[in-house]
Length: 209
Image (cartoon, rainbow, N blue to C red; front, side, top):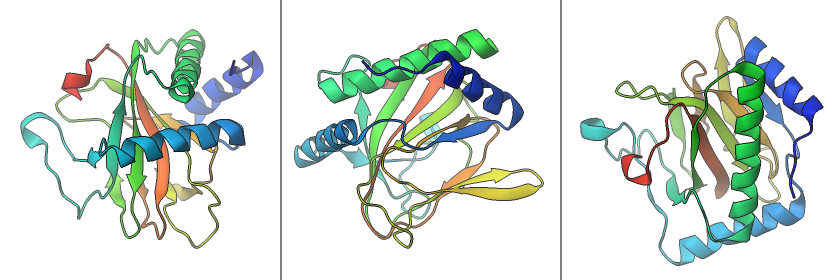
């Protein structure tokens, strides 16, 4: 079973409190990466991925000039064993950060994402104006054999400091405060795979995403 030890949990919490974000290379091993990627390929072959939008409620829209990925929402209780393992690990992280930082995180929503070549996501916050439920954003990269020049990097913007560039190497994990950390996905030149999610203040159903 996947596990996060107490020392790492404390380090994650300290980084969130001090900087508002942290990056962990090699969060999971290559075997689980391959299995999660296989789930993405299977769902894509079955036309389960849909074009991602921006905004929520009456402001929801599809705009490829802002965001170009396609997504597949992950059930809270998935049937696929790799997703079961990943959801369990994220719930362990959620519970650990609650203990360390008293964040009151109640739930998680997550989706698989594919960025085709030539797509990107402009600079934005993950918090909706109409709803302040997202507290932490989490990303696991699944793109195999990523190399410099392939694009799709995550840019984390910081007030008064140089932006942080995160390479989307398979196994790299990113966590940041949803309402404070502006970020963007640079244009990718290859298919870019990830699992993106949000730890929530209140439980929410898939129908409200």
